[in-house]
Image (cartoon, rainbow, N blue to C red):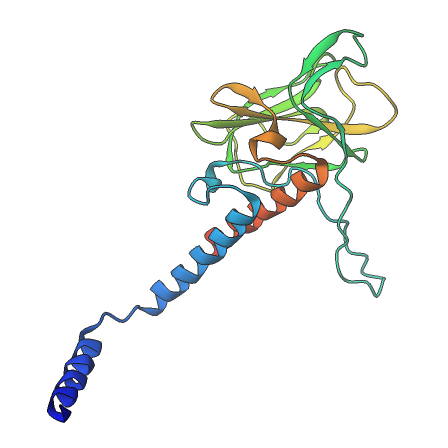
Length: 224
């Protein structure tokens, strides 16, 4: 019995010697994928396709740090949707029409950011409709649109990165009221879809949290 036990231990140790040992790169990659999977699961999006979804923040999500203050931690800005996707009474035309995007409250001339990497495929300046607007093609599935800009800082054919400033907010086109907003559209397979329901959110707070989570996932993946 003792001899059998010794033989078994020798065999077990020899198996451990021949077992493949993961490289440091494999260990790091595994930890990155685990972190991405955890974040993806928490926001209910398949992590294998999340990089294709161009829904990173398109407005500043944090207030600038006041260096003269002891408070060096950036404070989260309120993310306010002033008009949701869906049928509504148009505030200017007075007609019941489909609102094909979401309106997010911004300050005058606030920087507007690309919500994902892509190519500028359309730049228009107008006093009607969308006013001054930009369309970005992100991949074969997704495009995004940014409307009512006061100033456009890109041109057709430019390639932009997520978070890059593409224009400044304004009140061009058919807008109503004293405040400013950015009209944002998500276009999936050439169909305008509700950005909130596309990533399973019910309100502005949930939506802004998921924008930041998607941004974090992309940061982890591309910095690895």
